[in-house]
Each structure stands twice: as structure tokens, then as C-alpha cells.
Length: 302
Image (tube, rainbow, N blue to C red; front, side, top):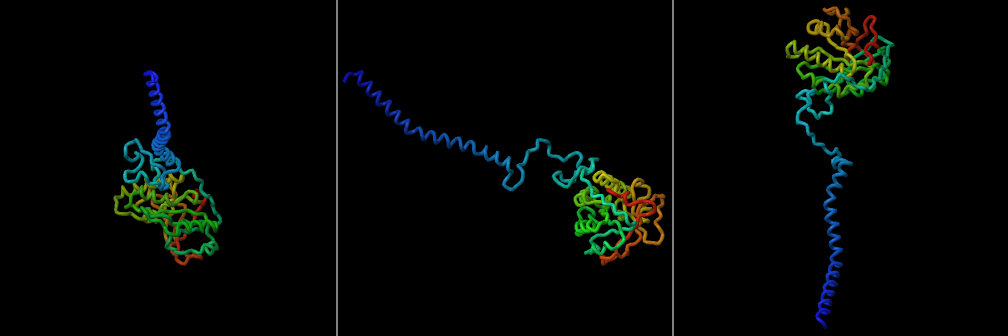
């Protein structure tokens, strides 16, 4: 065979073998490429799914905050910034939820109750000529009256005007008390402004007692959009509160046939005249009170 023809024949066979080898390897390269692409894209796809659906524990995917890890300037230093119950104490905007606003003005009489009255037959209470009830909700830092929700629901059902009260503890941080109160006393469940029960002097100085109480009262007013009613006894008021809350309404206790006398001459809207009242449906004694003079229950409406 001529030399040129032999060389050409060998080149042709080499080319054919290379082409056959490439044809055999091509599917493997394709499969390998697909596998590499899948492995590269899988994490991105999973991340996208987590972003849409949240983590497997049902919580939203956390977002890294680029700001310094410190509490807001408006938050007290001892309040957890992640506490869902915390509301800015400096925010003057009241809640936008509308209260019930049922004002029962048939009678001047009313009562206040707590878990100390135990189980109440509210259908029997409805037979008594009373128009309003103040129900204990909270006390101090963390106490919540165990019967509060049922009492509120039942009092509404029988048509009474309903308000709620917090028992103030001077030895406990006022901000923590505020958080406790607003976590339980909801605007939409109130007919009457909230009441702050002030009859404990605590062990703090008098200036701190008054200063903290004023801050607490102001925070409650901002949150609910109305000035709260303040409760105290005649003697306690005259000794500690006289002259300090000129623009607030008071419920004053004096268990006597004579009306309470306040040293600063302040008028009060409600006189709590007995702690041994009797009402059908309530097995224990109960505090009884009445609207005084020309005042109206509507002045306490939410």
C-alpha cells in the first residue's frame, strides 16, 4: 500500500475510535453535569422554601439585626425587649380598639368584687337594683385574679356596666405593674374607665410612693385614652394623696353613716359605704358603693 494511503487510513481509524469513545462518554458527562448542578442549586431552593413557609418549628425565619444589641431608649432597662406584652411607656397614643360603652344608668348603686367572693350566681345578682360593678383583674407584678374573665363575661351578660381594677403595690416596680395590668384588662371589654386601688403605703419613701404612683397613673391614662378612677379610704387619702391628683375622679371608702371628708375639699364621684353588703347570688359580704350628688356614671364611661 502506498505510504500516503496507509497514513490516511490509520488517521481515519483513529478519528473513528475517538468519536466512538466520545459517543460512549457523553451521556456520563451529561449526567455528571446534571448532578453537579442539582447539588449546587438544592440549598438555594431549600432556603427559598424556608423563607416562604418558615422554619420546621413553625416560627418565622429569624432576621439578623444590624443595629447594636441594646434595648430601645423608650424601654425600661429591666423590661425584656422581646416581651410581646411590653408597650412603650412614652407613647401618648391610646389603643384604637373601641370599648363596649354600655352605661347602665338605672340606679346609683354598684359593687366591686374579686376572687374573694368565690362563685357568683349572676342571674341572682341581676335581681338587685345595681347598675355597675368593678372587678379585680390584677395586683402588683404578676397576680391575675383567677375569676376575672368569668366575672367580666357574666356581668356583661346581665347588663351591668363593667370596669376593672388593679391593686397597686408601692414596693413593686410600677412599670412591671403596668405591663401586668394591660396584659389582662382589655379596652374592648370595658364599659367604665379602669380603677387603680391605692390603699397600701409600702416601705418606700413618701416622695417615691407619690412619684411612682403618678407615673403609673399617667401610663394607664395614655394606654386606655381615659383618666383612670382612683380608689382609696378617707384616712389614707387625707394622709398621703391629698392635693396630688386634682384632675382625677375618686372612689372613697368610709364605712360610716357619714359621707367621707377630704381635707383638700376635693369632690369624689363614688362613695364606698360598706364592706359588709349583701347581694343575692353572692354568698360572702361584698363592697357596696353609690354615685354621689349630681355626678353620673356616664362620667366614667370609656
